[in-house]
Length: 105
Image (cartoon, rainbow, N blue to C red; front, side, top):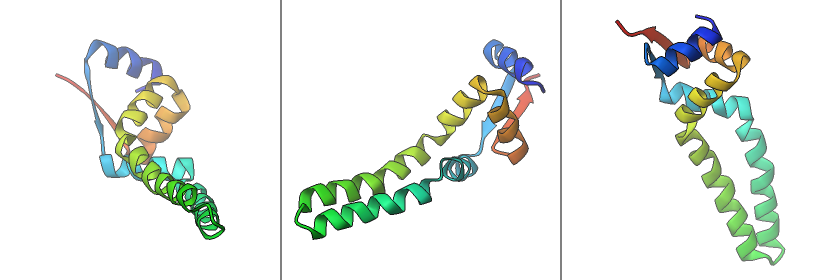
């Protein structure tokens, strides 16, 4: 199904969109490079905590730990929103198996 057909069918309610939560979280994590981003931020938090900025460092460590969890929890919503907005993202999500579109009879 083409992207334009998908948008039209989604808005009219003639398709059912299934998004695998686990696959969406993994897909989004790899697409946003979360592990690569999280490690330097955690390192910064540890460095600040060890150099006397204890509460600032602990706050950064907490934020770096919680942010990926929140991003992964909202992955389903992000995938459907991006699929409606971006044709390339829609194609990638369908090919990777994260997004499954079925016509409603």
